[in-house]
Length: 191
Image (cartoon, rainbow, N blue to C red; front, side, top):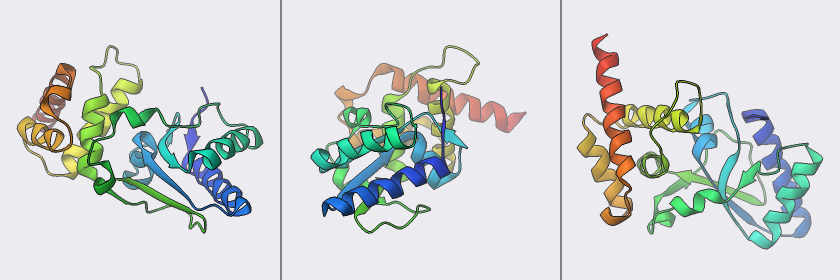
C-alpha cells in the first residue's frame, strides 16, 4: 500500500489548483481524517488517502483522476467517503486549512478540532490487533485530540459528539473507543 506524505499531497493539491485555474473554476476542498492529523497536528508522517468533500464535483472529480494518473497515486488517493460522517452543522464547523501551499483557484478547509474529534469518534472501531491499522490510527488520533482539547473525562467527549450528532446516531462502539482511550491515557499517566 502506497502511503501519501505531506509533500505528495501538497504537490497534488497544487496540481488540482492549476487544473481548476485552466478551467476557470473556483473550487473548494474540505479535508478530513489522516491528512488533517498530518498537516494540522504533525501527528503522522503519512496517510493512506485523503478523505475530503469537494466542489464543484463536476470539475474536481475528473481532475482528481487525472492527477492520480499523472503522479502515479493510488486510485482513491482523494475520495469523498468521509461525507457519511459529516454532521448536520458541518458548514459552520470548519476553519481555513493552514500549513499548506497557497492556492489561487482552490480554497481548502478542515474541521475545527472539536468537530474532528466528534467525526473520529463516530468513525472509529475498537482495534482488533496490535499492528498499526486504521482503527489503531483512529484511537491514536482521538488520544491526541483529547489531549489537545484538554479533556479530562469521557463525558466531555460524549458532550462534544452530541453537539454534532443526534444521540440515536452514535454507535455503541463510539462509547467503547472513548472509554478505552481514557483508560489508556490513565495507564500511561501512572506508568
